[in-house]
Image (cartoon, rainbow, N blue to C red; front, side):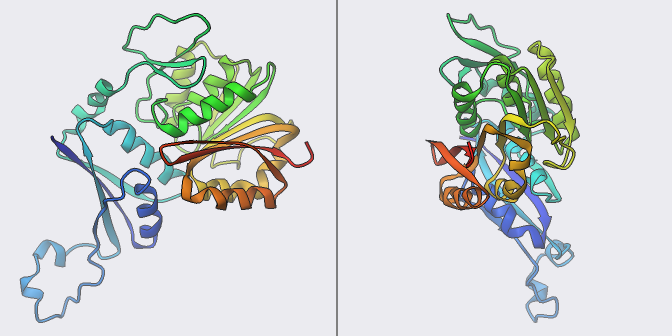
Length: 305
């Protein structure tokens, strides 16, 4: 089997965060950190010159992705979460030509049912919809959110349950726009989708157009910074990471109506209790939790509901 090294280079101060995020995909990390090398050691002449001359303020963390896994989704997952955590990084693919990578991941991406009714179909695939199915056509490009990742499926299945006809929806960290699209196709009357990454916003807009979704405003924003809170939202999704959900906990309630449902995911199961504590501390009640392969999605309502 062939493997591709997915290598992330970051500054020393981001080491713990980068390792924690990458361990969500693989707990076998290779860390290249030369910050402790003593340049004056008597053994310096035995150390590779490239290491001696390297920038000691930075380090690299790598995982190895087998050929039967979706490399594009691995990379986009990391990219989306590093941007959400405001981490500067460089991402390299060692062992695969970048131009080939940009389309190679398509062979792992097929029609995927992500709920009782929702089916995600890539643009290059033919699919005959069955009775009652809602088709979402996707070309994720360089943005995270193909529908195949557990966190996306968990959020989509909760959307099926909690979206009401005429809902006003907010999607924080929209990625490819898939959750905002699902919300619209499930009956939301108006949607607002935001992402810190302009590339993600461009891809999301293209995907919305492809699905005939015209009732979603998609714009660049650093989490909730540019979101209008004058009209409360009745449903909200945040498929990001536990730390960001916790960071938004004190503020998110001011954007939601009293009868709103707030769906969160991107949470590894060991961080569930941290998210629960933060949300309950800021006036939310847990409605439901769902699990898949070590990932958790939580649905909340304001305590005064």
